[in-house]
Structure formats: C-alpha cells, structure tokens
Length: 419
Ligand code: SF4
Ligand code: SF4
Image (cartoon, rainbow, N blue to C red):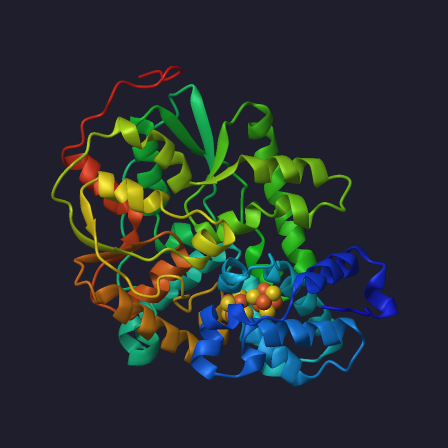
C-alpha cells in the first residue's frame, strides 16, 4: 500500500514504524474473515482492513473523527488478524500508534473519560482492586442480578507456597488483579514447578505489567509501569534467575514486547530487551519438562480456551494441549478456537454489549463437546467466561496440579535440583 504520512509524524520513530507496517498491507482482506468484530457487525470499518485504512488516513493528516475512535475502540486487540495475514502486517503495533494519535486528536465524552480514568487508577493497584472486590462481594446480595453476576461468589484458596529451595530459580509475576481474583494460580504453578526442581519466586514491589494503562490510552503511564517492573525484577535477574514465568498470557504478551516498546529509552532499552528475552509462558516451561511426568489415564473431559494473547500474541500453540493430554485429560473439540471470548483486557467493561455476544458464542463453542470443566490461561478470560456458565472455569495449571496430586509419578530430578 502506498503511503504519504503527514509532516507531524513522518520522521518520528512511531511514524517510521507505522509507515513500514502500512506498506506491507496489500489490502487483500484475508484478515476480515477471522476478525471477531467484523463477524459480529459486518462493517468494513469494524474489521482489520478498514481499521488499517482509518489509521492510514489519520497518519496522513486527514481529519480524525469520533467515528474513527469508535471503530478503533471496538477492536479487541485480539490480533487474530495478524495470525491470518499472509503479508506479516503487525496490526497490533499499528493499533498502538493509531490509538495514541486518536486519543490526542479527539475528545471523549466526559462520562467515557471518567470511566477510563477510574479503571486506569483502580485496576493496576493490587491493594485497591482487592479492597473493591471485597466490598463488591460483601454487597453482592444487595446488587441487581446483572451486576451481582459479575462479582465472584467465592475466591479459591491459594494453599501453601513452597519455600525457595532449588538451584533453578524463575521469577513469577503476581500481576494486579490475579492475586485477588485467583490466588490459587501462581501458588499452583509454584507447587508444580517445585516438584520438578524449579523454585518460582515472586518479587516484592513487582506490580502491574503496564498493559492495562498502555492499552487504555495512557501510554506514558503504561511505560512507567513497565520501567517500574523492570526495576523490581532487575536485581533478581542479575542474581541468576533462569526465566520470567507468566501465568497470565495477557501480561506475558506485553512483557515480551518490552524490548520493542522501550527501544528508544537509553536507560531501559537493554534491560527491557533482556527481560523480554527471558519471559516465557508457564506452558512453554512445562512443555520442556513434560517427559518427566508419567502419562496418566482418566482425567476427564476438558475444554481448553487458548487466550488470544497466547495464540496470536505470544504465538504459543499446542504446548498447553500437550501437557493436558499427558495428564490424562480428554480435550473436547472447540469450534472457532481462534476467536476472542470478549474479555480482552478492559474490553468487557468498556464494550459490554459486544463482549457479552462474544462470550455467549465462545461458551457455546466450549460447551459443544460436553466437557466437565473449562480451562484457560489468562485471568481476564477466566473471570469473564465464568460469569456465563455453571461449568467450572479455571486456569489449566490448577487443573493440572489437581491431577498431579493424585497419581503422577515423577521421573528423577534434573541436574541442579536440590531435591
Ligand atoms: S492486514 Fe494482511 S490480510 Fe489484512 S488486508 Fe492487509 S495484507 Fe491483507
Ligand atoms: S485485533 Fe482482533 S478485533 Fe481487532 S481488527 Fe484484528 S482481528 Fe479484528
């Protein structure tokens, strides 16, 4: 595609990046077939090709309107279009640049701005989100049914965490909302890894990964969150941590991009690149160790929902399925597994109608194989899906640990293990 970027952006780092991305797009439209919002709304401007054209116009200096912002707001950032694109168009990066520009050049209605600001202030602060969740749970019996259904009735217990005792050490990200909504996830990951000779350590002071504010339009604040997290991790990286393990693929997809997002910051560029290189999804870590688990029959029927951030963002495919099959689970077929469930960070709060439709479609697909439980790999998807089904929805590492507790026989520990 030919481009003629406007003077205000042409010679900037973001302008050059956007230009290179736009030039790769041949406007073939293959991506529209896998775009969840295009499939729901049938509007070219609610598909990737249309949005790319809107962003091109904005970058070329054409007027940016509320309609431009509406169509970009409706995008889930699921990046299914990237997976489909034969030309390698990095739509997600273009969207970051386009959204920043649209945020600068348009004014949101006041109620929208307030809502976004409240989310950006509350969710990344672990203590504040935990407090608000507690209030919500106490008030749950008094809430209207629609709202009460969004507040979890119970929070699973974390159980004991193993003390760090192995030579192999990996860092875990506690994250912002996950410790309050599902403290069992990182605890289960720590116990599973402990059994194969890896100590999983959380770092005090390590907060939000920055994705939430960055994708809400507060990009500078998101970058500040990223720098703060790098600062918190860095002493442990220097002390020899082997990897940074993500149990929320949404966070993992962003931490994997730290090196790119902070490439122009001389104080952080090298550290950010190192952090990104060390980051691995928990499924990648365990897939490498899977032969140390004896195969087990009879785990029951289970449907796996691979989050968009796992399959399209991180491009990790098949690892979780391999682990679950080894643990004896029968994975039920799930049609249209590439489509988003509608959670998408804060999308389910900001675009509730579309999110509900996507959730209903996803749950119907997940239930079609008659599973006994649903598992996924990102706290947002888990919480979102659980509000629409009576089937248990949990992180796959929690389901795996329950199986290991029964009967898996461990092979001898690897060299370097203290067990
Ligand atoms: S983003 Fe890729 S698939 Fe979509 S229109 Fe452009 S080249 Fe085609
Ligand atoms: S990121 Fe997802 S919702 Fe957005 S244009 Fe691409 S496929 Fe569509």
